[in-house]
Amino acid sequence: RRRWTQYWLKDPFSGALEFGLCHTLRLLSIEQCSAIGAWRGRYGAGEQRNLDRRARAAIAMLRPELRDTPQLDALLAQLRQNAGRTFLETLVNDRIDQSARVQVADPVALERVLDRHPSVIFVAVHMANLGDTMGGALLKATGRSGITVTRPFLNRFRQRLSNKLRQYQNGIVLPPGIGATRQLLRHLQSPGTFVLLHLDEARGKQIHFPTFGRPIPRGSNLSIAIRLAAASGVPLVPVHLQRHPGVRYTLHTCQPLHVPADSNQEEQDVIATQLDRHFTDVIQKQLSDWLQLYYLRV
Image 1 (cartoon, rainbow, N blue to C red):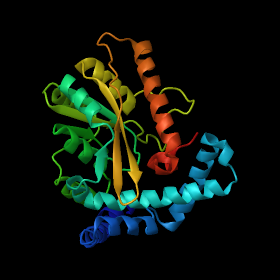
Image 2: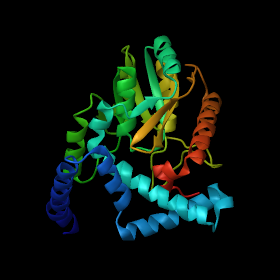
Image 3: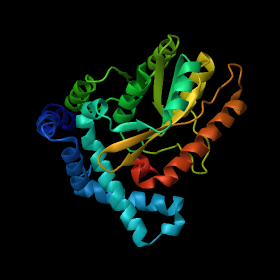
Image 4: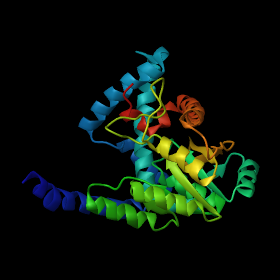
């Protein structure tokens, strides 16, 4: 009965509300939509309180010098605002893509990577976006055909809304699975392509990457990215977004990492450790804009 009620009553009701909210907010400017997100936050009051407690505990471990300080409260408030901004900005992401709101930090370096490598695997974390802004920025900056993997929503109406919004982009979004990995490999075999993988995906209600001193995760997007690079001969290129006032971003790209085709587990762990150190540093510098902080248990 509970599943029936969820599927036939609750999901259609919430789906109708979300469709209405989406079409209403798309009548506003990008700045207005983002500001409403900052004011409202992403989560309901009860869920927000629980997530704030979890984030406070995580920050106390990552930045112990902030424990019981006004700076910690300010960081949590900024995280709540940024999470709300990011959530509503996905509704107008096509307009963000079409504008000049995302600037590449080093266009020459990115062009050099693209000139040398017909295909690349971009690896990222959910910094300042839920994935759509990063995907749109890479499609525009590279002019290539992109593909990524993300878990579909349980609510079928929310998934339809997500699919509708993503129609404005030219990227391909696949659900996770063995078939998706094979399709990623086939995609990389064509020149002028890229794959985007977020390494900080939640599994078992936990974020396993970056490790923050924990073991390297197995069977994660990190493992898939490294093995995909070894199988395809395509380099890994770390990327992340930095948020600025006025709904503007900087796209940062790093030097490619090459994974030898005959690399063993120990050699692949070295690459994993390099990525772990890089994204740990990125997150520590922009802790209030790492959206997965709410789900980190360290």
